[in-house]
Image 1 (cartoon, rainbow, N blue to C red):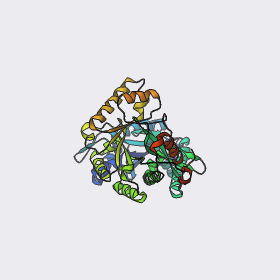
Image 2: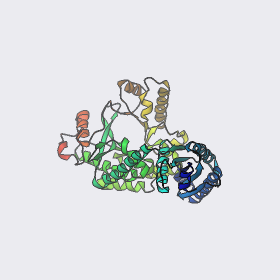
Image 3: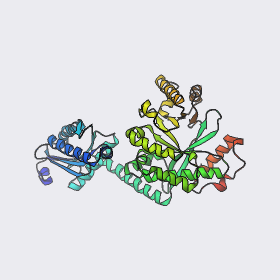
Image 4: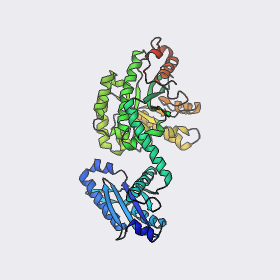
Length: 428
């Protein structure tokens, strides 16, 4: 149906943009041939959800567009969209596998949301990303406010690319405190963005966009190199061996050459491998266990220290955990926050600490903010604490000063931190 005809007879048309949730996982784990079979099944199901006069087309990859012609009003689009979501969510047999694949669906309505095909596709695409933000298996109608959000996201993406090129990224460090000695025994590296216009930008504002666009991989590589360099700088300043923990994103962890990047960062900085702690979230490991196990063993062979981050949120089995060459479990801050008032969190933290002790693993509690939390964790044998009670993230100069003050005689002699602090430091 032509747009002009719809306007003439006071009808509407719906443009639906669909993107399969986590389709890359299917391709990576089962292969492109199985992925193609899944796409064929999706196309068939979409065609069965619409009327003969409607249009179903594949735009590319795992993106499809559906045009619902000659609809009475926008409300009549909703039942069709729901039907599509249900149809695609039903299990599908692909080869010898049975998969459950969901989709994110964005809707633009003619003439309300645009007068041309290009405008409607763009707006439906914008709405689809809003559906993805809701966790997938969802639909969203386009609204004008979404365009502002999309513009801001594009600006952040462009700014991040500039930040990588022009050296605007910074590392802050949060101390990890040994429970027995009270000394700073390691630090977690946390990336910040020093934007020329906006100042210091929190990772909450740019990390999700970096993950969505794939920029998280080069950002992660920069963090890895800079963390190794900084650990070596601290050694030369006489601070002793202060390991630096670096978070690996799920996407970075899945890069086949990750171990080569780690080895290169260590070699370039001359940092001992023992001073690099790599933190991988439990959910990232459990997504593809066999592949993760292989990657973890390659990393462990380099001599780096491996930590499971956010432990307790990824549902790893005991049998799998025993196979991982990890040395530390980090207890997720969500469990620590309410241990004083929530009995279920008490039980979970107790269980994690007992499990770690049985397996000979070190434990670090994240998000420690009160003395009562410390008392609870100390009684149960937690090895180390990280949180605002002890320190907030800070630049390298401030971190050096804190270590000198807290570790006292354990630090080898006086140092002039101001003269040796790297140029990228931010006053804290």
